[in-house]
Image (cartoon, rainbow, N blue to C red; front, side, top):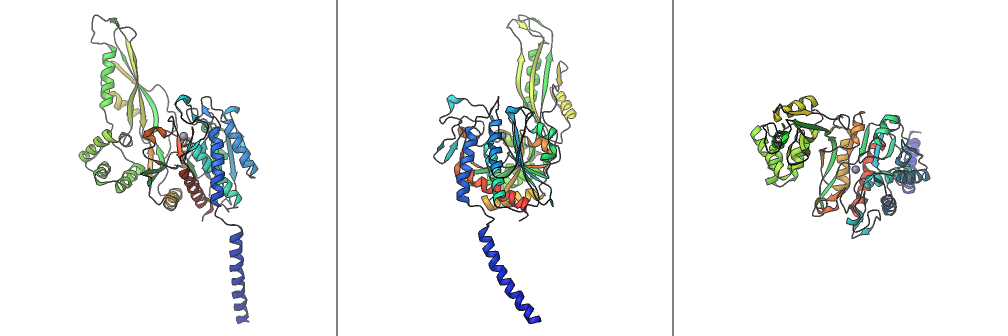
Length: 476
Ligand SMILES: [Zn+2]
């Protein structure tokens, strides 16, 4: 009896092994990558060829395309719009609910183009020399195509999911969020509600054709203008006055230009500079390490170097203020009674706005100059996405598998749609394809006059997206 049972168990194990092997061969969980590449290129080019430049947008073109592709696959997609010409698309693959959903998104709008400057027409999606050219190639139709392909693959391969995977293609990211993410968050939040979200804002950096590291956006600054308004007595230009508003304003602007608000790090920037130092040659690494020093003099010296050589890194250390508009005077023989400058202020998330305004007043130190906020923040405050979260660890693991490199969390100095989701408690991570570090400065980056992506990196990004989403959602 006992021996019979053992024998039966052994036989059934063998049968099971054979059946399992056969089953695995019949329904592989790994996509057919050759076919995926062909399909990726088809959707990517189709999306690039839809002119969704904003203004006016016309993102409904992309929305309808995406809905038709998703519907055809048996993934019901909904079009949601406050303005029918600027619609959004949302679709969901159901999981077993043991984990909270994952939102994957890309924006459908692109910035406008100056057609005369494009060698390959901006909406032609021309393939040339291993690149695809077109407005949106790296902002953000790359993320859009990758998220779409991941949805299609998850559905086709019937990947069992621990959590719902939600796809969102939103309009209006480039300067008109009221029709896109704001509308979706305010009117349709239950359809987006997720534990984690993946959007644009990161990428892998190639130097001499080799990926050196990947960045993942986990935090961004908050933008809000500050105005400096100088007031004085109007008079005849032939009689210089001490109260000349332009003189007072110029003095105030010069002081702001020379001002360097205090350095304040957070988990993202601390980890970023630490990991960047480990990847950099010693002469540069010492500046990144200097930023992390407990010694204020060492920190200041490192900051000086960054301000001279890598200003974006200097901005990542602090809330910043850049005087970008100046207005005053209307004819040369009139001393104007008023002159105004507008500062672009980018605050750290933990900045106290009122205190910052007081700091600006203290720096300006001129009773003839009023310092004020003319408007509210353009985006709500949000909490930094956690570096010890399941999502960040999954990103690091996928980066290692697909790019064989390390991941640096990064704080954007600019703003993204993720701010609206972070404000609702969703932990968002900005990802993106690999690009050559020198490609942007050469004029091939986002918003440039010859935007392009390497075909090989588009395909690798789809693999990365698939690897990351399937590991985070299927619990593999
Ligand atoms: Zn973008």
